[in-house]
Image 1: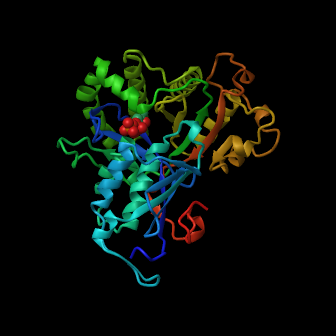
Image 2: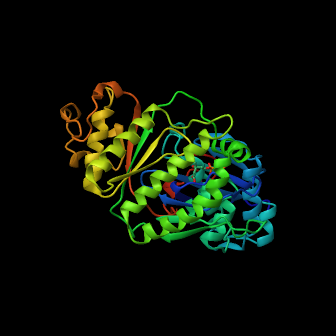
Image 3: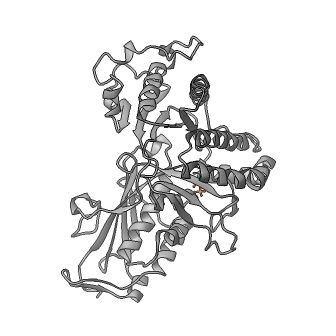
Length: 419
Ligand code: DP6
């Protein structure tokens, strides 16, 4: 086999996800076992995703990885744990057309090339590790003919990054914390697929930030060590909230969904402030967005928009339907207009067909927007120019898929090196 020159590869695309009941805190740092269950919504991979190509060849002399075109080290324990776990489950692979035959045992000796690309800027602070590790594990499982269902694969992706386990499924996903020491029951399960509640529209405000943020990994470690609120949250609050959220999703009960999502996001950030030293992920812009949504929801009498924030200032806003999303976008653009030289289609990325519905596809749209009627304070719209870098309009989406079109592969099929 060693003299052969073939390259065998698989390309896959995997979504990112946003937690509506947050994971914050580990009981086991190595296996990445959480202190509570969490629930997320998978975001449409057409708008936010990671694409990964994994290749194997007898010509490769070591495992190598390129992330967004730059070679990175695979020596970290998280990568090593995922590679070890997936290799140990590898099966026999045969491609008769190419004359390739790889036996179960061969995988221990063969080396891999991995190229991964996020279709959104890593610097935007959107959860790239979730989609990244999910895509790594999913594509390797396909390459190595690993005969495991997505829940089993989620337990491997979890060891790369906790939130990654939830990206193995589309729609609405629960990560069950489990109780076993080896973590084998700490897996993700799908609660409902993306079609179950397809009225929802998600608008992400990528908030400009100058401050260097504390990573989720170290932030949650500090919270576990110092926050009493975290212990109360994990023991008393989240277990009930998880049941309520499952009900809300099952019944498409937007009022409960919003109440639970917003309260949980706020409690997660309260835990961060309760950490010593305190961690501040949200900034003034984040707080302004919360206040706009809260005022609007209150004035309507029933919730129209849910908000949630991860370990950074970006707002993820979930509108109950398209009509509400159009109004929401108009309000957001009134308060956070683009800088004058910004093209609207790059200021509202993702599904930007919403611009037309909002009457904002022409050049003069934003200046003519009126302040939302329920907002009685006098913050002039110009004040907030530049506070939001851009928006992404998306929706709940599907889980990982294999891309069969070779033109989408990130590695050259002859050399196994980045294209
Ligand atoms: C705030 O999954 O990034 O986004 O497991 O250490 O890699 P590690 O952390 P990570 O934490 C995500 C935290 C969160 C909430 C969530 O996604 O549930």
